[in-house]
Image 1: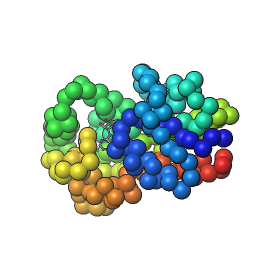
Image 2 (image 1 turned 90 degrees about the vertical axis):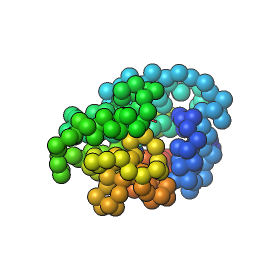
Image 3 (image 1 turned 45 degrees about the vertical axis):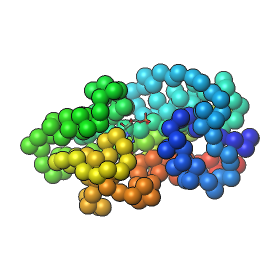
Image 4 (image 1 turned 30 degrees about the horizontal axis):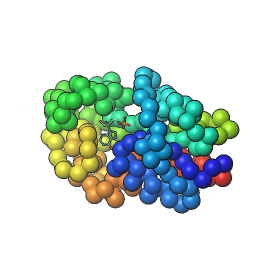
Length: 198
Ligand code: IMP
């Protein structure tokens, strides 16, 4: 098994978080850019698992090492778990999150308490050199806030209020968010599965 893991993202912020969490695996973790791979992957799965697996499989021709990929999004129960796997494309890829977030708040007008439940979901897929595919899933449960709050994070963070912390995920420090986030939990669960292979 090689000493390098390719993580299928070009997002530097995500890479920092991933390197921190997977540090004790003792492997070098490189982004697509660092691996010199340029590929357009169509994420047309209906679940987070399907999309994460589509990504690792698309990269298999480029390496015989370990490949990891993630897929994530926001599920709003009152909206039938939308935007879900369409979170990045919801209302158009170029629409600002200020507009997307306000649109979700507006759709929940008059909806109160537990009926505002929502969660961030992250699924990590791994493709191992022997052809094995592994997946792990992490979530953080919250409620859609009545108004946007917080400057941290990105995307839908300003509208996901986490009752346990009394704030939105945009109001958490990056360290706090890593500890409790869907991505942090899914990555730590994947790390435990990978350790069994090393
Ligand atoms: P992807 O997994 O990079 O394709 O991201 C999917 C989309 O889900 C992002 O573009 C955001 O809209 C949303 N999303 C995923 N994780 C988070 C998060 O931690 N905070 C806010 N939005 C998120």
